[in-house]
Amino acid sequence: MITEEDKDHIRRSWKLVIPIAETAADLFYKRLFELKPEYRPLFPDNLAGQKSKLVRMLAFIVKALDFPETAWKDDVAEAEDLLLVLLALGRRHDSLYRVPKEAYGSVGEALLWTLDYGLGEAFSPPVRAAWTAVYKAVSTTMILSVKAAEPDRSLDPALGAGQAAIDHRMNTLGMSEVKAAVNASPDPISKGAAR
Ligand code: HEM
Image (tube, rainbow, N blue to C red; front, top):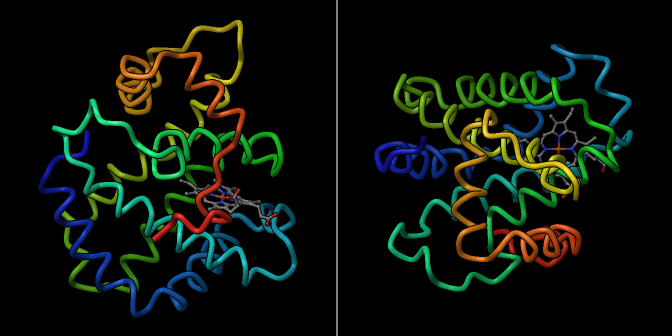
């Protein structure tokens, strides 16, 4: 569950990350491969492109927090729909990049470590809690995408945070449209929608 206070903490701390984003991305991958050297071969030798894509995706996620609760009935352009983007991203991680589910824990740990190191005192306990809640919702949705894309299996309610988001969009769009959109793999990075 992401509260309005969490959103404020994320927005304010993200503003502090922007000027140090390049260094933060360097630190993030350094930390990840210290924690899990076995994940290094999943990535290309040159990480430069990957670093900027990750920062742009985080910026897109932070921006999406501005979507007002009251606008839930409104149409959202596919490339700006965080849920669809995350479902497609999750499928790519599973089917193209062969990322195991358990890797999401280590990536979350490396992300929180990086924010802690980069922000210092500004990374207070409530700020940490806010980033933890957002990472949990994002990673759960990505993992859930693998299930959502399977035509003959129902979604598993035990999956929690991502499930609530899926239910919300299913109510407004209908599951078949969600699946069609996931299969079309919207990509905010190459479409330049990430801000
Ligand atoms: C919330 C979690 C994550 C986010 C937001 C995220 C974000 C991204 C983004 C934006 C890309 C660029 C390519 C694309 O859009 O498909 C990417 C690629 C990739 N990610 Fe993630 N990722 C996450 C979790 C993970 C985890 C847990 C791993 C496992 C170590 C991982 C490994 C990779 C790999 C191997 C690539 C492809 C690199 C390449 O071949 O260029 N990611 N990720």
